[in-house]
Length: 294
Image: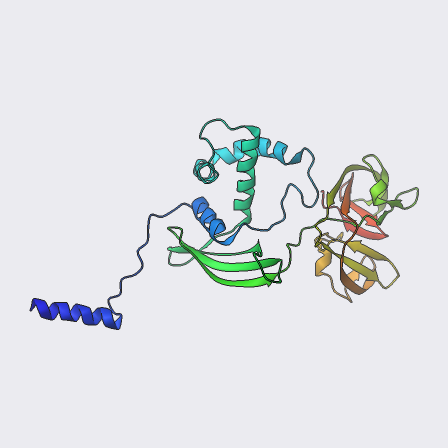
């Protein structure tokens, strides 16, 4: 009888009906799972809020120090960051707080979506390509609750659509005539749009500039009335549309778009400004735009 049962068990394993499910180890918290994904797949390529749409005043380390209490208040996530980055458990230096802050930003850039089974999470995000012709890849896959990562696909991808503003050649409308954006300063008087839609003069209360990545591409926009503009795809029009989503035939600032071209940008830096007032709007090469600084 014992031999018969043993033979039956062997037969069941042979035909697959008794194959045990893969053992699942100790469940990890969400922060630990995100680190498991990044360690396996790569860090997310994203629009860093300290540099896009423009480099923030005060610098990344100053922002790290000011944000540190908020990060530390989430005890579970903070412990996971400290452990992953091999940091001490006591007081941290400003440089160590910067390490925590950078890890925290990466964690925020990666989204995990729980599946119906509750045993794994799905991820999809952009990484720097390790090789091949594409500079970036979109990676899809799953991470099990014990941190086992499985990649289902890698597809070539473009860079993230970071909204980094205006070309250096852009002219800004002011009561004294057009002024090159590189010459605009805090306190410069420019034309802006009031809440009622009228054109009013106001002083610039903030300016920003950032070094454009070597691979950055800009939208060259041509309107039917002859106006044109070179601007980053993520920059928004006054009615809230990212320029990169516009198409030929769309209406823009009282005219029609004749054509748009995505072109390499060799201007080095990009620029933006924020006028005082209710809207944050201004005219760039005669086209009404919304500031990314508002």
